[in-house]
Structure formats: C-alpha cells, structure tokens
Amino acid sequence: MKQILFLLLITLCSCHSTTSKKGQENEADSILLQEELYPDSIFKSKPIPTEEEQEQSSETTSFVLQPVPRDIPTGEAVSPTSLSMQTEYDYYPLSTTEVKLTVTNYSQQEYMCGNDYSLTYYNNDKRQWETLPTDPIIEDIAWILDPEYPSGEQTIKLYTSEVPNRAGKYRIYKAFNRNAQVAYAEFELVDEAGAKRLRKQMDAASWNGKTISSQNIYGSGMRGDSIFVDLINNSIHFQKLFRKEMLNYSVINYGAVRKPSPFTQRAYTDTLQISMKTEKPVYPIGTESVNVILTNKNLSQQNLFFGEYYFVARKQGEQWIPLHDNSLVHDIGIILKPDGDYHFKAKLYPLFNDNTSGQYRVYKEVEFNGINKKWYMAAEFKIE
Image (cartoon, rainbow, N blue to C red):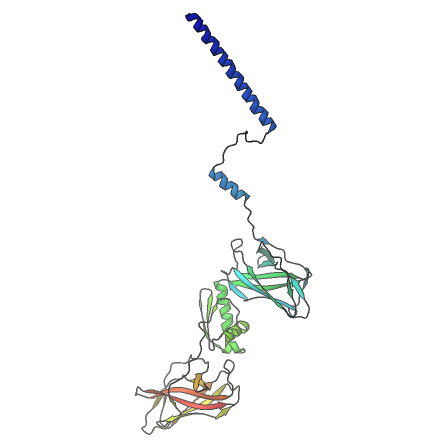
C-alpha cells in the first residue's frame, strides 16, 4: 500500500512540473509576440526618472532669447537739417542702463522706420566701431514721421550683463525708408575722471560770460561722478537752458527750484540823516546795472557801517519780489564817515530776470558803528 502511494506522489509531481514549464514557455512566447507587434507599448520596461533628471530635462527644453548684436545699417546718410536723432543727454555715467532716444523730422517729406536699431561702441585702440548686444525682440511697429507728427521716442537698453559699459563714445543707428537712408545719435559714457574733465570744461566756459547760462552760474562742486551746479535763477527753464548752452550731462544736480519770497521788512529812502538813491530815476529795459549813492549826513558824527551785500526787488501788485541775483559777495565791513558818500553798482541781471516796465528798489542793510541796531535803506527807480 505504501508503495502505491509513493508512486502516485511521483506521478503528480511530474505532471505539475511539466505543466509549469509549459506555462512559463507560453507566457514568454506571449510577451515576445507582443513586443514584436507593439515595440513602443507599455509592455516594454522603462526606468522612472528621478526629480533631478526631470528638472534637467525641463531646463534643456526651455528656450531663452539672448540679446544679439546687429550690423550697422547701410544707406545714404540723412542730413541733420532734415532729420535728427538725439539722446536725451550728451553724457552719461558708467552705471547707465537705459538711454532715451528721440527722432525728429524737420523736413516736409516723410520718413519711415521701425523699432529695430544697432548699438555700437568706438574702440580707440582698434580705431573702429564695435556692435553691441541689442533687444532680441523687436516689435514690428512702423514709424511714420511727417510734418504733422514729426517726432518719435524709443528707450534703448544697454545690456551691461552681456558687455560691461566702457568709458567712451557710443552710437545708435536706425535705417529709414526701406533701408535706403541711415542716421545715428551719438552719446558718451564717462567714469569719474571723465566727469571731472566735464566739470573743468564747464567752469572754463562759465568764465567767458558769452552765454546767458555762463552768467547764471556762481558755483559748482563734485561728488563721485555727479556734478553739483548752483544757478542764480534755478528754475526749470534755466536748467534746460544750461543743458543746452553749457553741459548736457545726466547727473547734474541743480538742487531745489527756488522761488523768491516777498520782502516785507520796512525800508527807508531817507532817515536819521542817512539817504540812498540811484543816479537816475528812470532806466530803459535791458539795463544791466544802476549806480547807487549812499550818503551819511549824520549830525551826531556817527560812522555808518555795512557790507557789500545788496539786492534788487520789483513791485508786483502791493508786494516787492526780489530779483534773482548772485548772493556770493566778499564778507568785508565798510565804514562810511559823516558827510561822506558811498557809490556802488547794483546789478539787475536782465538775462535771467524778466525786467519789464515797472517800479524797482535797491535794498541795503546798514547800522551805526558800535550800535547793534540794523535797518534797511532803499533806493527806488523805474524801468520803462
């Protein structure tokens, strides 16, 4: 009986083993067949990418536009009398990243262009203009400059991350009328040494006194590559005129715009045997200065004491408004003895004061020597 059971167990194991082998073979054949029929199907095993591999794959497929240099356009040069290209300033510091460009048509004909441009730097060592990176995306917008709409503006970016700024001359070129004509605007970037050079040139020009602005300046200073300018008449109008006549540099600091306050203190033309008057009662428009006479006829034989400073005011309504003047004077004391006269010129600065017809006064502060009590004398005159 035991022998019969043992034989049965052997037979069953043998059958099971045969069946398993056949099943494995059939399964393997099935997989091979599917791979042949569907080589890119999910049945093909693929490794799962890591997070780092996924990030690298994303970076590889991203598309970044880089600034590109553009060749200088060719064509006939446009006359500046017909069409001008100018940057907002002639000089900029090395830290500049943007430059504002204005194109103006002065002729009666039409000029057409787009937003495309070329930017160049003059290499003194190589004695040639080098193209610099420009905006990689140029909007396809047409400019039509005609007598009715003669101007257009554009902001030009300096890609300092691509090519660092260098001291020297730069040009912005644009092509017009289907690339048949070309024009450019030139500007200069300066370092601290260049800014000092500009200030010296400005100070030298201020001494010749040939322009309104040269007579409107009474001092300048520097801090780094910034220039500080003190104007006698520090208004927006005269700041613009200074940039036009003297120096068009982007980092000139003029300080706050000042408006003269009305002079409200009491003044005398004749008091305590002290009098003051102008040489003439009436002067023509455009008069640059008036002669003033201060007289001491003090009966108590007291000396009159004062300084060089004075100012001139114009009557507006019921108020006396001081004119813009150069307040920098020598700090010296002047003594006028009894029965003496003191003559001085009072400048009216007509170039940067609107000295129209009207009533004017010259004011001067005085006191008796040794007595600490001051008052104002006034000499009145007219401009007609």
